[in-house]
Length: 520
Image (cartoon, rainbow, N blue to C red; front, side, top):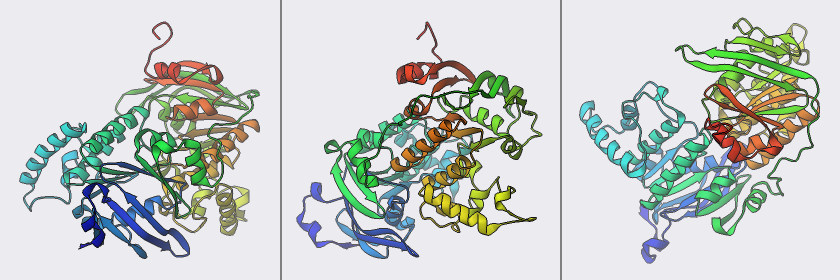
């Protein structure tokens, strides 16, 4: 690294931990970053927000060495740095926790932490040293995790701790987190915030990429706003507000609440009685669930992740066996596993799965192939006995325009879109099929504020067309804003049902914890 001349005349408190000057990056005709400059001061939590496709992750990937900028300079602690790859970034004291974790699932926590950072060819001394350091780091930063646990057997909250521990084990003083709460439950997110506070107190510098305004206001010291590849503002968090930040992100005023008229429920669309699911390990995941859903209403399922909501969606979507009875438009559904997701679509059930990458998309397929996925046999996509690929591409272009998918390229593979834009592709496919019943899990996970507003409007519009919507979300605000009725799940059971307009977060939180009636 060459030392920048200005650093010699500054006190340590005024030298940025990170300074980017004039960073530009294009991918073909798409200008992802355009002449971006930003200063991140040491020992602070600096938020970077913007819509999906605004260029946030690209900018941080340049800082971490995944991409090379077309123009611009990087300074670390006042010294000009040439970051050629992630190893160079690690040597410079930078660690990054990605939105989708980079862990080997059948390795243990300890094996993942030392992977690529072994002392020598002898693995046992490396593991012994790592175990000692891991215990110290866990105690210092509230990052408790079993070093011998296998990654695929621990929850996503613990997996994220492993990613943070990996960075700290490599002596990172600067930590970049990309949408860190996108896969976390509210309690896990709260614990993450405590960890970040501890890291800041210990002098670490944190860059937080997020689209969630509540998180920005709660945890950051400074926030920078990006829009369409450019930096539009950097402000002290205490001097701004969620509406101001939303307008800076989107370029217009954004409605931060759901504007909807009272529901007008019609006949029953979905009737569920005594639904039970036992998983492959013999654990009962659904324990006699019963409820009904009418035309023209949204039923929100609230609850901490892992209490049966996922299994309920999978049963109704045709990907999991169950016992009990389910009727769709008065007709019984086969719960034995002989009917698949296609059979469910044929009777009018659409499904936005909770995990877009595992269940909603084929990541190596192009956007147009994913938009048609599951509906490719329909007449609109057919040309005689063959699929009409031109019609599929044209339909994808139209949907991308309506849902503001960026970049609006139907030929681009799904894996090359940001997480939020991947979500828009899945949501566009299922909502625009206009099913009688829409199962929608975590509809706005990883989606920016402008797109959240749009997706919420589409869900309400579907309801107002007389469709039934079963909504699962770990975002309690989303459940309260969108739902007409709310059912709360705990330990595979429905603990209670409330009218959304007559309920509140405290009451629902008690039910989510298994506290009911007189006990509450």
